[in-house]
Length: 473
Ligand code: HEC
View 1 (cartoon, rainbow, N blue to C red):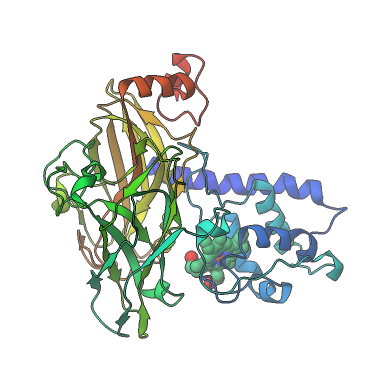
View 2 (cartoon, rainbow, N blue to C red; view 1 turned 90 degrees about the vertical axis):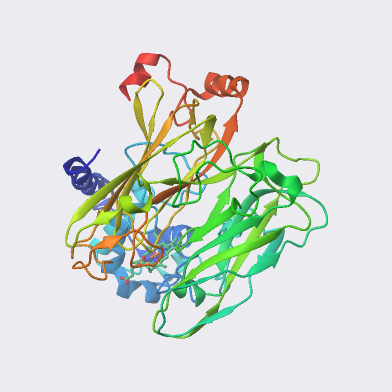
């Protein structure tokens, strides 16, 4: 799916929203008026308020009618285009079942659109049931019902001047535990709301104890020097092959591992931070916090989950060459040396990023799309976490093929300068492309057991009845 096909998909999807909204509207009118207090407030409370309340990360509050009314037109645009809530995965292809789905249902989109089209009415005061407003920072995992983290590890704070070159800040933090613990879920957040403006990414590298060599991922086939640090690691090289406990970038929430899998941390280990900070015209002091949720003692998981940055580039950094005023694409290929379950997808780009597709090329040459984000938005490195049943499994020898599209024209509203050539680099104005995915490796026996239940590849947890159906996908 490249070039014009990719554009066509956009047109079709936009048409689908309109087509879908119309009949729903017809059903509601003329008997029922859509009002804020009765119909819209419950949707905003469930799907918007956590980010759009005073002191949270959204630019305005959507708690009350008075707060929301001035934004009606913008709300309709963002909701109908499925840009808000920030859940941008393509709904027509690949894995479609997620642990952290924040999308609106088709009915909810239709209700919001009908509310704005009907004059954005307030309705009866007695219909409004307020939801408590939280103040300030929160853990997305706690909002989603997983409780507070068991351990929070903070980096030191740093002050970024109003005007400055990008900074890569690399402090260390101790991991204050007295016995080994298994992590089932991780989340990174900026240390304060201000920090979200300057913190472009924050990676928590795991400085390993010599007893923890199992944390080094060896299931990804080598392809020479890697620009993303994921190629051919060696278990003995603990210094240069520090695995990531988590990578966070603007807009990401948490990673929650497949049940029965996790990451082991041991006493004496450390977090080595890599925080990319970008000046925004005001002086801001911030840092990062890593929240860890543990498996209860006695329920240690049997398997490790590894975080991999599947590259969207061939032949390393020099593979990225984006002429001024052009649309470009690159591709990367990574061989799976083991039978592998993929448990999430988070596309990572910079300002020219437009779309990313991750596809599996099976050992027999058949291909299948795993996930596709058509309208990538730099503000939102959303993490799409597959449900355990829908997490696809691939036989060893499968190639993970990442295709990345870039828009370096003035049509891209995030583009700081379409007249610049863009190459690979760490600065926000440079480009890169990779798919962050957590993987779990299965022995041949475990692989057989899983495909007996759920089938091979992307099945959304429903094993196809016949192989011919599978081939048609
Ligand atoms: C995960 C947090 C989050 C959620 C959930 C969320 N928003 Fe947002 N929203 C933001 C942030 C941050 C911005 C500013 C950055 C951007 O525009 O992407 C924003 C921007 C917007 C804007 C654009 C405002 C403007 O400048 O015109 C609208 C409209 C909006 N959100 C509406 C909604 C609605 C309606 C919902 C629920 C259906 C929602 N958002 C859910 C965080 C969120």
